[in-house]
Image (cartoon, rainbow over all chains, first blue to last red; front, side, top):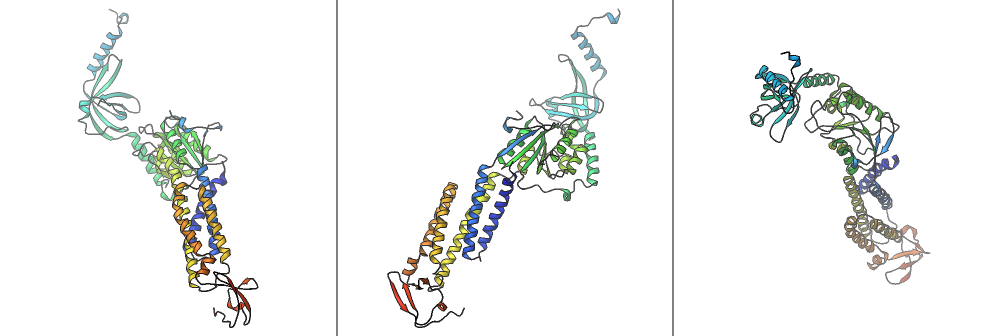
Length: 77
Length: 403
């Protein structure tokens, strides 16, 4: 489990939203806005990338502490 | 004849029992609590009447069921009017119910109400105590039975909706006397793990009040109240309320509902990301539009000095933009193509030759572009770049801007 990866998605998305807000408000120099735009593009690409690679892993933890990966579809049948 | 020596056939003995029992117990009122109420598709109603000491199976035939005034439900304390019958073929006796009347609320229900009042008075159900469910949990703990539909409903829903998620499922007993301590153990095991979950789902499929009773046990309710990790309950059906539901940080109507509430839909997140993507594009377009307007206003050489640089920057941006979009979703590309062509038009409008064609010239001195009159001196030789051709000129008068 990559904690950083997951934590970053939320952070990246929030940062992207902030950048878009800033750009929409305007009032920045052109150079600053270009820089910000590029940063936004990078964040956007990262968010997309993570969404595509999103994985869910399910572990079953027994009372003795042992854990095994399981397939939910195979359960309760 | 000595009775001990008499030999009965099974049929004979059963017939004797039937006569004795049915003769001994004519029509009577039976007091107890309803349990295992089953509306059979034949229209007959099967149930058990019980108290602390014993239970009797009962049946009400279809014709009588339709005239019932009460809705038979598990846990309901009732008076059942009828007679005892022996079913010879099955070797069983059962109560043939003719009428059912409510005799006050059931014992379990009273226990439930008493504990609810007590814990409520302690403030265990206060809204202020409830913890916020995280938007995007990385790790979700699931406590439910290892068999039955609930575990599958929860885990499949989490897998379908979830995003970059680790689910830790601990199978626990959810019914019977061992269930409550087992659920408490599960909670403790989850929160004491090396990586405790960000949220815990406690779930169980539907059942009678007895089946769900573990979720009304004080130790379970307290364990949830004391759990440092937010808990979502999804016990039984929409209409079932257990004390675990009251104390949970969030009550979901069903196990599936609990899994839904614990996750954010991947598609929704994707939409949120793409919305920002299109806003981002629009916002940079606004800047370019504004830049154009500024250039129009500042008649003359102002701003032209850096124009080639900027043009290059923009074209690069446009190229990169196209490149990145090439990898992005097809729909996105379709949307952005229009915007891109607009952007290109605008960029072309800003190109130096176009600007020069509009009648502007670039003034330079010793290969340095002049954008400010204060850089000039009277008598200075300057070079002019026009839309077509170049020229040399001499400055005859300097009027620096007052700004």
